[in-house]
Length: 176
Image (tube, rainbow, N blue to C red; front, side):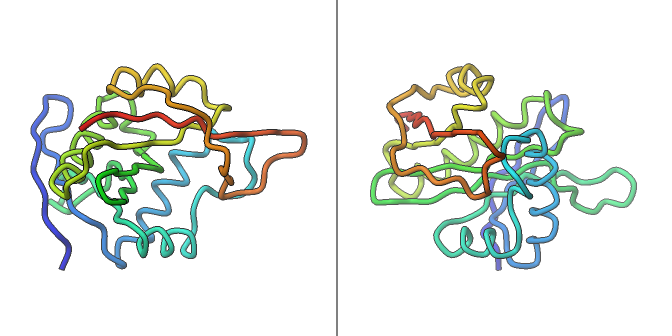
């Protein structure tokens, strides 16, 4: 049984329900993540697949943000984020919001829910990695309270780089 989390209300999205993903959620997560990361044309292939997602779910958890679909009451997947705990530090990655729901403040709400979950597990700080080829994300994460703390030297992209592209990860951190 998946762990249940808070329900958050908002004007733009009537109700968000947060829960940890289970194996049966994988096809929806893969579809969402690949759609959200389609902008990354500097990497070849898809952002995630069954194998990558399975590995992530073994080392951490995927937090889902869902909302009731008005038509039939089923739960629509609006976003997700990967969360991992390492002693008193947390790591968040692969934050994804469905393209049709971007710009509504969901990324902030998903991050806040994930940070609350990490806090409840004893984390005092959280780290993220932003690709240098996505500089538009730095101001976004700064607004969420994250600060650049260095370069991720051991960074290895999950996909093959497009020919001639060089990429590195920029570490950003936030105290919880």
